[in-house]
Amino acid sequence: MFQHNTLRYAVLILLAAGALFQALTAEYFGLEILTEIAILAMLVLALDIVAGFGGMVSLCHGALMGVGAYAFALLAGQAGIAPALAMAGAVAVSGVIAWIIGAICSRSHGIYFIMATLAFGQMAYSYVFESPVLGGDDGISGISRLDLSWIGVDLDDSRAFALFCLALLAAVYGASVLILRSGLGRSLSGVMHNEQRMRALGLTVWRVKADVFGLSGMIAGLAGALAAQHTMFISPGLLGWTVSGEALVVVILGGLGTLVGPMVGAVAFVVLKHELSAITTYWHLIVGVILIAVVMSRANGIFGWVEARWGSRIERRLADATRKQQGEGVANDA
Image 1 (cartoon, one colour):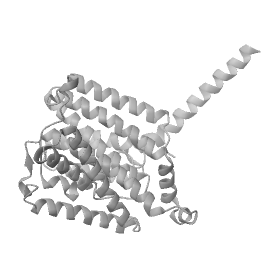
Image 2 (cartoon, rainbow, N blue to C red; image 1 turned 60 degrees about the vertical axis):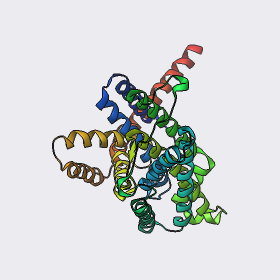
Image 3 (cartoon, rainbow, N blue to C red; image 1 turned 30 degrees about the vertical axis):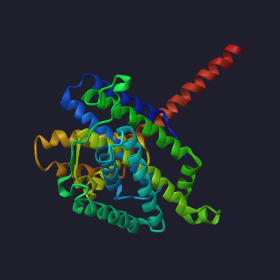
Image 4 (tube, one colour; image 1 turned 120 degrees about the vertical axis):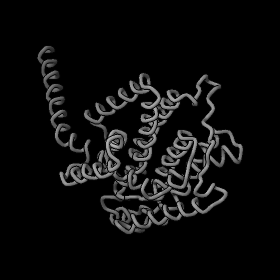
């Protein structure tokens, strides 16, 4: 079962404090980067749930994010539905499609699961690219943002939209923790570690995988709906396998199966992308070298390395301090 420790709480507090400081003090460009980080963090949290805690390495989460973006654009634009309902519809559509993909791919493992999800992602990309209803390769522009004027919030303001995305990211993280701590999450962990034993115990394995994949798809769809509102433009490139590949890189870079690590990876990846792209067009090469170094070090990403090096030490010191305080309390009582 997923558990927080002192180090994870500390990193979460640092991330939240840094994000709030950036949201309240940054100018337009800084706010755009912060929003990009928040949306990417949602996508990698969705991927970490299935890959890090379920062993289902997916290469279609970029497509699920794109499904959410296109569903929102169609519902809010062409169908004329209120943006709030359009967001809920986009999340639901992404979840249903993800559940179907998870159910179909649940009996495959390893490289076969990866290739099956990649195939689904490319099918979605090809359909959107060729569909005149969805704008084809020209995409869809003029997408409106959620209207929160009834509570005095203008999401057309970059600062307000960044804070809105951060609030939803916090909600997504909380929901992810609840999923992993639920009976479904514990079943998923059991399936990852010993699928045959869980099946022998009477668990419907394919249903567990499909349900978790569907919930993960809903989070990816939410990220897509926010991405559509962020840029107010979407194109088939959002469904490309490279988006899923970048999300997987971010998860590995931050720390697979930690929830906190992928958010650290999202910050590192976006900051590196913008800083390095200003210096060279080959920034992907530098990020690749960093990723290879992380993998070859046998550490579970940036956060995994920090946790392995310092996590147990911090826990021991806190335990020693607690025992010392308890001993002093007993002595005083005596």
